[in-house]
Structure formats: structure tokens, C-alpha cells
Length: 307
Image 1 (cartoon, helix red, strand yellow):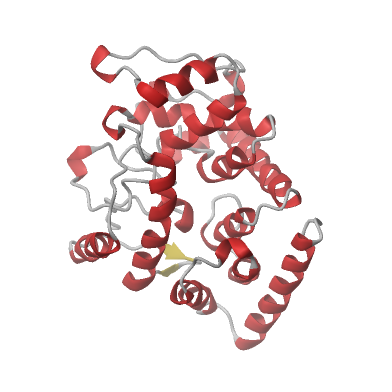
Image 2: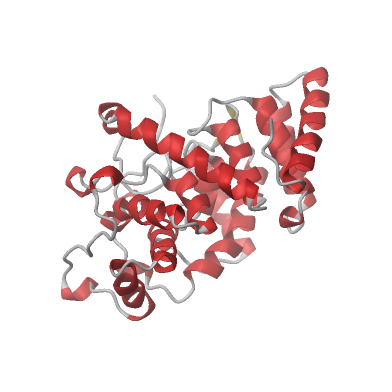
């Protein structure tokens, strides 16, 4: 029987490793079980399909102890009034920051080692379990985004019900042209679904969101956002937006690694990710994927969508 990971490793490796709290070795009693995209499972009553929500979702009732304060309260008010920038930021912090903690590289490495020593299953890249070193490098690389986006947020006041609001907020902001919301929606479009059964029971909405997420990534590419290359590579490596295709994943990740946005990725991380994908490819397929990656990056630089 497959054991569920407390890390919440999900189908999209990079997306999951960016999610705060999923990087940290947690006691399973601290939060509900994690779903495929790494976000905590809300009660089924908390899920509200995007298609049924008004343009500005109302703030749900909350107890005084959990009432939004400070920056979050300001975002809530602005988002409710129709501010797309606030909706983008609020939706992002709901899925990223629930378990955020400032962590050093050494602490993150210890967390990964401890979790795997306790029997936690590593995430899979194109069906191949990632090595502890690769997981550690991804987690360490992701921490900078968490620090940037979650600093100053009181993570203790974020509930798993908040994650259920994220897709609607992100979709509204992405429809208004906010690029970060486009990227976040592609990562967390299904944050309000509790399990596979709910996804299957709502197949039409799931298909709609997949198509919308793909469209947002294409828009982000046309606007010169290299992170869209990363997310497409990760989608082909681990799903769920695309069917797993190691060669296509290799091509998109190679293209991303050519971009300035990837230059802060340690060489060992870049090499390790591509090596994990290469385990599913022969030498001819690798050569072809590299050539495809070069073409994808040329297309990206020219503002054209990859073929």
C-alpha cells in the first residue's frame, strides 16, 4: 500500500515544493490530509467551483480570533471591491503561506532527510522517484519565493478553507491580465478539491480549469514570463495539466534553464532535474529533446508560442 506523505508531494513537483509547509516535516495531526497539488484538504462544503462564484467573492465569516488583520485585511477589502492586484496576491498567499516558516538551507535539508527516514515517499519526476539530494535542492530553491511572498503574513490565521477560495481569486485576477495570477492558477487550479473522487465527480469543471490554466500559461509565455516554461516543463514531468511526457518535459525545462530567470538555480539542481528526466529517455530522445528545448527558447525570445 502506498503511504501518503506528510510533505504532500503531489503530481506537480516544482509547484508542490514551492508550497509553504509542504517543505517542512510536519506531524500529520497538524493539518488535514494533503491532496494531489499539495494543499490541505478542506471540508467538502468549502469547495465552490469557480463558475458559480460572483466576480468578487465575499469574505467568508470567521471567528474574531481568526479575523484578518494588517496586510491580509487590506487585501481582503480590496479584493472584495474588485481590485485584481489584491485578488492575485490574496489567492497566492492562501495556497503558499498557510504553513510558512522562515527556514535556513540546513534546516530544510534536515527536514527532507528526517521525512524520508520516517518513510515519506519522495515526489516523482516522470514516474521516477526524486533523489533526496534533488528534493532538498528544489526545496531550498523554493524557499526564496516563500520568503518574498509570505513574509509578514500571520500563517497561523490561514485556514484550509482559505485555500478553497484561491482558484476563484486567481482566475479573476488572471482574466484581468495579472501574470503572477496566471502562473499561480496553473499551479493551484484545483486547490478547492478534496480528493480524486471530487475531481471525477466534477469532470466538466476540471476540464474547464485545465483548459483555462493552459491558456493562462500561453498568455504568460507571450508576455515574456519564463516561469511559464518552468511550469510547462513540470506539467509534462508530473502532471496534472498535461499528459506525462519525459521528452517534452526535458525540452521545456532545458528552455527554462537557458533563461535569465533560471540563473539563480544552482547547477546541481538544473543537472539533477534533467538527469531525472533522462532516466526515461534513450540517447537519441535526449538529443532530440535538447534540440527541441533550444527551439522552444528561440520561440520564447521571439514572442512566439512553441510548436
